Image (tube, rainbow, N blue to C red; front, side, top):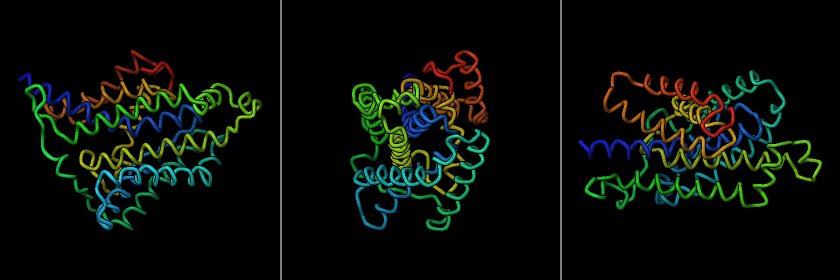
Length: 288
């Protein structure tokens, strides 16, 4: 019984780590730009397909494809932000929603055309397959990797945003764009770099999540609500809030599917309502 509970908590943390990795980029862009980007999952899907293509067509090791998944999605996000998204920063939220939903359906059609409708698979290295015994409990090696990667990235993000010049410029742009521009900060460049960082993290999450979340052209729609829940419950513009929200949602989702499989996603939505009623400004203290 105890081992089952520990296993569920562990799987929930691994699942929550993926939700956070994709959702934190959305939190950064929404908190900084006040831009409702429902197309964020499309960039996560792009990272997944970059990893699959490099692994299947070029024979690269799965771990070696991860930096390319990040860079490919970041570059795609940078180009999309410069050519498309920046034109809607001052538009109404309804216009932003309609545009990004259209972007999602366009990305689904493109993925279907180039890669087909089937689920994609990635070849895991032998040392990441199977389980390892920790404190008397069998834990999946791949899920241990997910948790370790997200822990390292969380620390790196925190240090970047709190201890570097770039982080200071980001915080200044968040607090007051006009004042930041008056001080000589290139707010447009900051926006572009943050957007690229967010989409890059999404792409990395999409690549790492192939074994857990799956990968097919419907990915952006299938997980759109989950990524939004992480940001809404955690609070946009923060790291701590979405991290806590992702872990809570991941654990409850895994536990719900294990103990009450017939309830489906109902448990997650009830939990979301409870958390929003208890923390209307988000777990991070900022309204999403």
